[in-house]
Image (cartoon, rainbow, N blue to C red; front, side, top):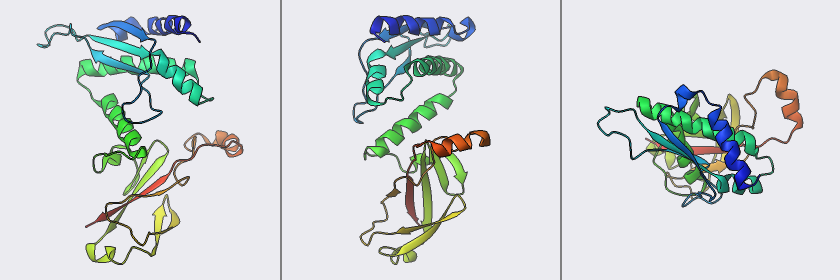
Length: 232
């Protein structure tokens, strides 16, 4: 899809949204350039909703926003991922940014929190600094266990005297009601995260049972299990 076709389709999808949801959105601007993440390779911003400079800071006038959509970001992701559905992603991006406008106008933070979690996850996977316990904003699965996308984050609580005996040993953990044995590195540090690729959630794992047979036959993606020692 060339830029002109993409821009026209963007406006068609935006115009199809009921007008009451678009109230206060000045424009939906389509940019030919990509918007890559400044630190994390292969992460691109598809769209964003920003507060218009015409918004009344006193709150006396209706809240105004501008939605930006980045054609180059869609192209970059489509080129790197053959399964990337540009039409579907474009529709979801526009709806997501309109939802941002609605929530911003109402003073809600749900999508902002989701975007912050996505950002922290991307930084974590890239080995960059992240806030302590950031993964707790993910979906709680069980006590001490959270899911962020397909990754699982498991906290293992240890007393300080017990930690001294852990490096170089084996631990049997309970992950989703199943035993999971890990070998703790002999030089393990208490601030490390132990990662086990392919031991997280499977793509489509939460779908209806009627789809399970198809999922079993497909080569789905699997996340990682990240074990976080918590020394108390």
